[in-house]
Length: 264
Image (cartoon, rainbow, N blue to C red; front, top):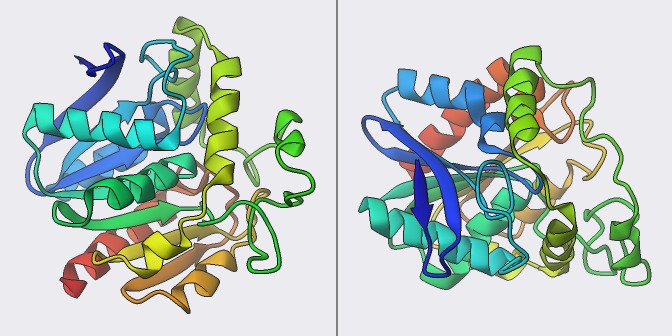
């Protein structure tokens, strides 16, 4: 299904199931099929599931306009209002987690049951105050490092049936990667630590032990200073945790959703 924002940008989304609503947010240059196994799993556990492709990604409209994390959070809010959804869990992978924090910063925690961050450090630029950002990214190398090709995001590749679904979407939808370069730089510039520390809703972190992008120790580092936070680290997984170790990830996801519910 498709929805047009106030910017007249067409977003593609799926919404189905029963019970509490879990919103699955993909990372940059991903499409919503990355969550294929989680969508099935969550519906089996009686959740309603909303997945979407951000502007310029997946099956959504190609555009140079609005390539900022806060704009994507506003797009999400418009879609939720359109669907009349008022209570949600946000589950974001990589940049999708940043969109979750932007949503929290913009709209507060009134409608948020909780957030699950999947392998996204709250601060991507390493400096004297934070050593768990994107590997090798410092103020001296920003933003030039981001113009170079990133390493493969996985530890040992993603599961074949998920890859097939992702590839099918990419084959049928041309890409506009130059617009997403601006989004990548905007995402990397953010620092969500204050948003997390001051959050009134629970936040759970799921990391990949062998992520080529982030040191998984960012999770214990942020939970040490932020109340209402917890984390789990998944072995034998890289950055695309949910697509590399889907069965293990799904149990961690359910554990995170249960933990969040217990905090409220």
